[in-house]
Amino acid sequence: MRAQLASARLGASASRPAGTADGDGTQDLAGAVADHIRGRVALRGDHPEQAGPDLELALSRYEAQGNTTAVSTCLSDLGRMALAMGDTGAAVRFHAQATAAAATTTDGTAVLAALEGLSAALSARGDGTRAGYVLGAADVLRDAGLRPWDPAVDDRAATEAALALLLGEQLLGQARSQGRDKDIADLLDSLPVTL
Image (cartoon, rainbow, N blue to C red; front, side):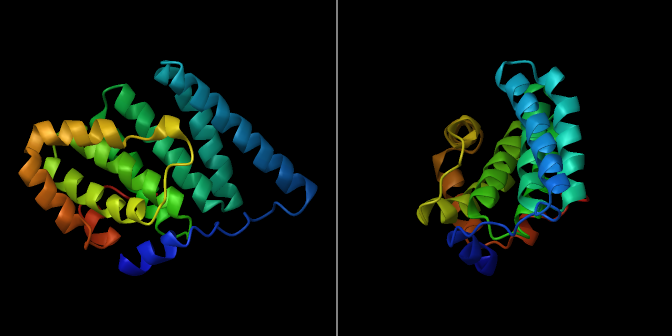
């Protein structure tokens, strides 16, 4: 994880998605982004049940283009949708997949968003220690100056408060400290990450 986090700290953008150099690729990307935006609007408008079809369509388009950063972001949004609908199992699955995808990029913001979303989902599921580990890994990126690109998806404050209630401040501090040194593969161990 240290190598992954060091790479993410650089904040380098992911490589250009396959197919975006020609007109058709640009249209495909524009369509995927439009689908994603519609899904996000529904999610933000407190209509998570309406977000799914657009987010799933955007996800399939991003996957077809090989746009791993966008895949990760879309999976995180699907995780937020599942959490808003009370399905903590699906939320953990989507956020774990988002984290696995983001870890293959050099986009530190995507890694941060995925980790913090995963921590929120694990906390909601009652897995406080693992959520604390994941939050500790996200702390490394925050310490490097990274912040979520969209403040509307910043799960951190609510997650910290929930974890403080779940674990207590001392245990949360210990879990976060241990999480700072964990590899992403260790954080995802036994979680459903198959894409």
